[in-house]
Image (cartoon, rainbow, N blue to C red; front, side, top):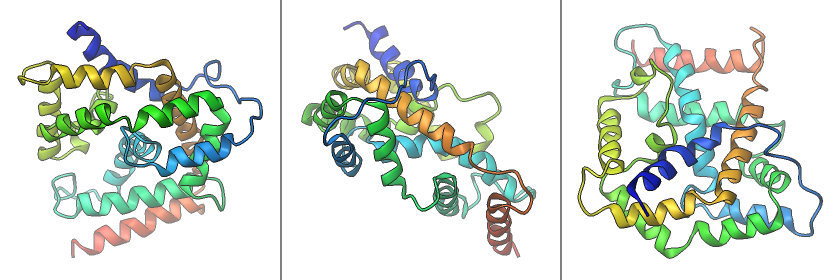
Length: 244
């Protein structure tokens, strides 16, 4: 497999998560046990870009764009000692707020996957998501410095660098070096991973999750007295208190 295909599969196929055109993601007709199969896929969080992980990576930049607004002083930002710890909690709260009332993230993702994928596609994803060869290749690449967060967000909009710490930017640089084959001995692992994430069912899986995320983000209301504004005020108080 030519290196160009490997790189394209890694840098382009994963970005399909942001392509949520309804023409590509339609509700599937009812099939026995599909929801249960989707729940099993969601519970298996050890595979390569499993649903909870991939959804979290999708939400990351969205969360950061609001998190940075909580404080306006010069000390606040990705290099602040409390940023990484607080960002995790903030993003968890923001994602939960965006979900349908009374739904957990696991339940929401299972229903969205069952709605957007066929039984055969779910079964194939479940089978390949934890394939030993793919998991081992991914683990070795991450051990060498590859960051899936950077790969998923490789085409980040201009001006977002300030949402990432110095160490995160170094990780992004290391990931780029791996994908550009500037690090020796990674071509075989890149090919193994690309064969999986370049598969049609994986691209559709990403689109389903991308559409689910965009739908959830659209539920956040702009009412100054609404739940979203209340969440921002509560977190503003929390991160501002630490500065006193």
